[in-house]
Each structure stands twice: as structure tokens, then as C-alpha cells.
Image (cartoon, rainbow, N blue to C red; front, side, top):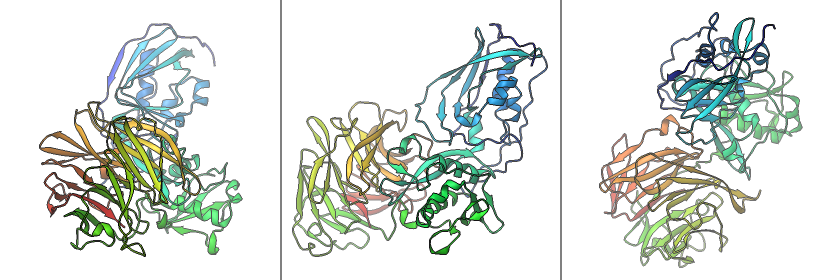
Length: 582
């Protein structure tokens, strides 16, 4: 290296606008060179491949502004590669640069002169971690990169590049896809999805495993765990055989796990890698030899672990309140237990998958009744478990906990009922606030609320902390989300998948709209990306995290409508409220 000196403030101003794509995404392991073949993760109808782009290297005697802008353009190579971008860096910086450290996604950039080189202003940025996980930045945020340029052999080069891939949203729209990593909940009873955005192509399996071994992201860090022993790493790349077996070569740390624990590791891998087309089975190897699982197995199908589905399993029913009692809306028959008999004036309900207990709120909102639908207590009167001021629709989780939110003169009070014991849980950002709707995720890991009043339309997602046995200990991380820029009144909220919320709003007095939000603030799955407009007023949703069950709306006129192919046929009448049951 020779002729090295810092550049003065003699740069051009170079604005470059890039259109905002529909999908924002993130970073993971980036290849230096070689072909990358695109694979669709979730959609049968995949988007067409992005055009081939091999960016030019630095021009001879290029100005500092040209070097900086060329560096940004070079990170948009397709197939994805950072080898050309590295040629814009100084010798020391090129050897040390780690573009896998993060991803910065922007709408436009401007290059301005600075005393040491160049200042790059990025508009409307998002940031993702090294796994491709969303870090929750709000729209409209800007970011500045202060780049130092030096002269090497008479040519300007960047000496302090950010350890990140810095690209426009349009590039990610073409080149990256959303996947989920799967981690166990605090009790080990279910697998929680953790969204990431990784490059499309033949390295998908390798990138997913690297992300899985890195552990859960920020949004789930206090409620998710992994079965992999600490220090376990990926040794080389994942290889998919002609028979569809994904051989996952791990470091020897994984052998600290027993065969039973290794089987749980395989469950995490199976749920994660089943998203990659062509993978049918999963096998962990160490130094080329298969790791032993329970039952003498050495691999497992990607369908392993159905019991860990956070959306729930088993036959589903549709129950509702009609003529003052709870009935099966598909058959018309009354359900068992006290609340299936006449004599109760009810306005909302929830059904527990533990013995199919029903919790229903009185019409005046001042009491919650609970009854069994089967067993020895089926003929007993409904128990009044809570009295309140204005109780919202109740919510059950898979642990059988009954969650209640009472709208009092002093704001919201969050209550949880277990074993007949009622206690208040203080939830920052929720307790004492004006809340219009809430629901706890079926897996019990997160609480979602929609705010009422005149504040900007927004919702909040808060993690629920538990012991290993599932007992609630308090509230954890919290994130505020915005369903859209329109000033609309929020009406209801529910979990449409284990990591996606459906938000019901009223843009006008005669229309309703369902919008989808990822619980970590990232772009939603393509399967849940389009909002739905209902040409009537609605007062509540009937929603399940099992996407096989259709979304339904209840109107003020006690009619039930079911979403189907973009239309909303009326499917039932005289329905005050409804809920799915298992």
C-alpha cells in the first residue's frame, strides 16, 4: 500500500432515488461470488427472477462521489454477491468488512461532502440484524453514514464501510423472501415463529440454519428458547441430497445434548426447513457421522412435531351467542353446560381448548360467567368469576388461562384467571390506557391491544413472561405498531397466525377494513399481505391463528359474514357474538 492520504471536502452532491417496494427485508450470509438460484418459500406462484446485474467496479481516477455511489450500486448485484463492492474499499477495509453484520434498507440516498470524505444520507430506512430479523424501526426514519476516503495508488477508496449490506427496498423486493425460524416457548410446549428475510436461492437452507443457531431475535428474546446446546455452530453448508434429505453438519457442541434433546433440535430444524422446496427429511451430522436420535433414528421427516403447532390442532367448531345462549352455529344445536341453556344475556364469548370451558361477558359488560360444556360440572350453573365496569371480549390461551380486560374510569385493568383465582397483571402501555380491543395469542406468549380514543390508530404487542410450568409472572417487551396512515377508528384485533395480527377498523360509518400486521413490525407474509374491505359496518371479528379457518365478521344487525375469495357472503343471522372452539 502506498500514496495513502485522506480526502478533503471536494465531493459532488449525488442524489439517487429508488422506488419503495412492497416488501422490506433483511440480511444473512452473503456470498462473495457464484450462482444463486432463486427459490420460492411460501407462494406457489413465485415472482419472476430479477434481471441479471453484474455491477462495474471502480472507474479509473473516479471522483470520491463516484466511488461512494458505485459502492452502493455494487451491493445490488444479482446474483447476490459482495465481491465487486469490496473493490471500492481500501486494502485494510476490504479485508475487515463484514456485510453480514446487518442490513440497512433505504428508499433514497444522497452523497454530500465532508471534511474526511463523504456523508451519505439515507431516507426512510429500516434495519435488520445479522439473521435478517426485523429491528422495529418506524417509517420515515433517516440515517447518515460518515465515510472516510483515502487514496491508495492514486485512487480514492472507502476506508470505513459500515458492517452492513446497504441496499434499496426495490432490491429486496426482488431478491429476498420472508421465512420463519422456529423456537420453543418458555415452557417447551410449542414452537414460536420468528420472521427473517434471507436471499432467495440455493443457500436458503444454510442461511436458515445459521439464523436458527444464532437464537431468537429481539422481539422474542424473553419468551423463546432453543434446544441447541450453547456454542453449537454450523460446520460448512447444509447439503440437500437427491432424496430430499437436508444434512445439517453441526459442530461437536451439539453432542452435549441427549438423544431426546437432539430430537427436539430436529423438530426446530424440521419446522424451519420445511419451508424450503425439495427438503423432505432432516439429519444432523457431526464430523460426517449422523447424530443419534430417539428410537435409533438418524433423521426425521420435515412434518415432525405437529404437536408443537402454535396455531393449534384438531377439529374446530364455530360457537356463537344466539337468543341469550351459546349454540353451535354450524349445526344450530345448543352446546352443553349452563351457558348453552336459556337465561343469560350475553354480548361476547371465548372458548378454552382445556375441557371446552366457555367464558362469556354479560350484555351490560359488568360480569364474566364461566361454565363447563362437558364432564361432571356440565349441569351446574355458570360461575360468575369477575365483576367489572366494561369488560371486553375474553381471551383464553393454551394453558387454560382466562384473560380479561376491564375498561374502568381509570383506564384498562388486565386480569388473568387460573384455577378460580383472579389477579391483576400490570402491563406498561396498556394498564391505565384507553383500549378498545385485545386478544392474547393462543400460545400464550404475547398480548395484543388496539387503542381507542382520538390517538393515532395503533396497536401494541407485549410479551407475556411465564415460569417453566406456564405460570404468568408479568409483562415483558413491548412494541407499538401502526396499521396504516389513514385516520381510522380501530374496532377489533385478533391473531390470524402465530405471528400476524388481523386489525378491524372503520374507515367510514358504512365500511369496514381488515389489515394485517406482523407482530414484530416487519412486512407480513405474502399470504397475509392484502387488506380486505367489507362494505358494511362491523362490530367484531371471529379469527383464529389457524389460517385454514376463515375470517368472519359480526355486524350490528347480528349477521355473520364469512370471507371467501375476496367476497363476504352472509352465513348466519341472529348472531350476537361468535368464536372458534376446539
